Image (tube, rainbow, N blue to C red; front, side, top):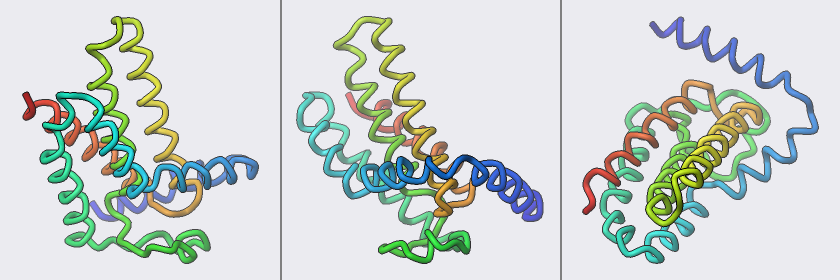
Length: 170
């Protein structure tokens, strides 16, 4: 199984890192804007601006804790790239915190906004959230900060967290 994961990561990384060099600057901007700390502050603002959202805080905190716990338990090393070696905060690679936090923040914001807009707008908001979370995840592989399976795990854990946050709050 491990060999299949490595083969998958190697193949997907080779495709993504072959993208044009001019994408580097936008990807770095995404990395700065969508770092977990910044998203946590934004999430708190969203949570406190919507009545139902404040009830989501404990479940969101548990989701963030689960992501950190997985990182500490699995302890997967980041790719051996110049970008990963220069990162200010050195943490394990799996699952991607950027991808997880982005998926949770945008997913919860989409769910919180949905009742206040029409059906067509709900689809638009959800589509933007999906594209944005996908872009952040792919940018992490492009920069060399993560393996593709780290990103996939971040998306899946993020989606599971959005479901838990929305399912277990009144």
